Image (cartoon, rainbow over all chains, first blue to last red; front, side, top):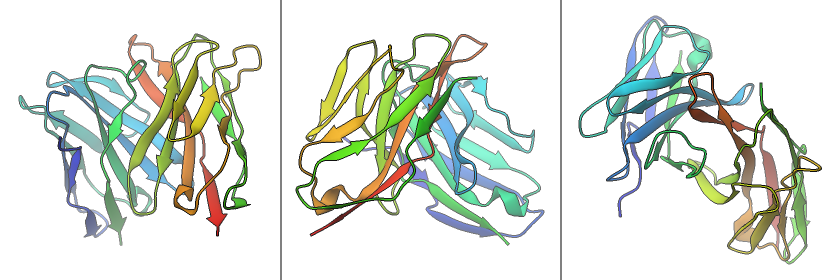
Length: 115
Length: 115
């Protein structure tokens, strides 16, 4: 059974650029969530998608956006990159929306470096 | 909002030693509790979970008991191995205003096990 697949694994971007990260959930999982991991702030919730709709959003500026496709694959976009956006971005999937009863299965992450 | 507090690391142990990583939480409701593990260069893996008071989660020799009276979910293992060296995250499911749930993570505790 394939796990959660995130691409690319590593990215280097310049300030002001935009970036798109991709996540393919486990087959049959309909919920996809995104988290940002940094040494200073730890793991912070970005947003959750279920059935192509954003269900929850964390406390991040509008430069962070996402979407989910009909096959449950999700993309996350960050526009006008700032140095502080350098982080490991983790995607997680769950059979249903919310993580209360199931927990998540995480991907290996995309490490974004903004220079 | 809800929060999780973990003991500072790193925790340094010799192989076959007993492990305890403390975790306490603050929550207004009745969250589910989780332990995740992150190996170098990888995403997070769900280690164990407990969904109600007095539940004991267990996996791969690790155990944690949901203690509502002390708001704790301490991780224990009777005999650690070098391969257990990783960062361990305690987390709870937090019900958002939308009625849905996200995970709130502690800051992580690094475990180093020497032969």
